[in-house]
Picture 1 (tube, rainbow, N blue to C red):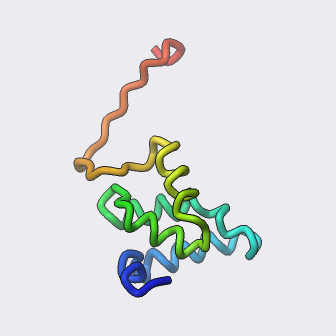
Picture 2 (picture 1 turned 180 degrees about the vertical axis):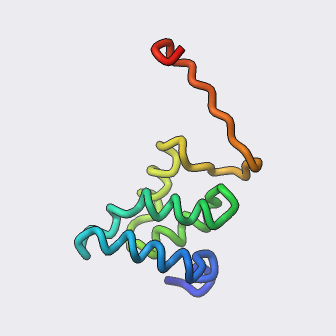
Picture 3 (picture 1 turned 90 degrees about the horizontal axis):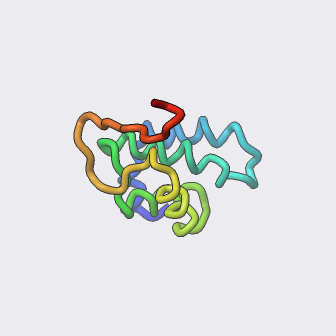
Length: 96
């Protein structure tokens, strides 16, 4: 991992990521991408800047584009700074 990206993932985050990676075979590190993004987002004030997603990609040894695809597909990942609280409103008729 590049030096500037090492700084983006704290030692505590890397330890937590390594715990997640231990759940998967060594040749399937990309399987931990969702857990790794959650850890990185939690450690970064609730959002994922592109540089942090690049660091996640480097740490997992996968293309940055694959990390961006996951981060943009799932609504649990924030790509812009967010406030302290997040309110979600369900508009599904079956939930009403």
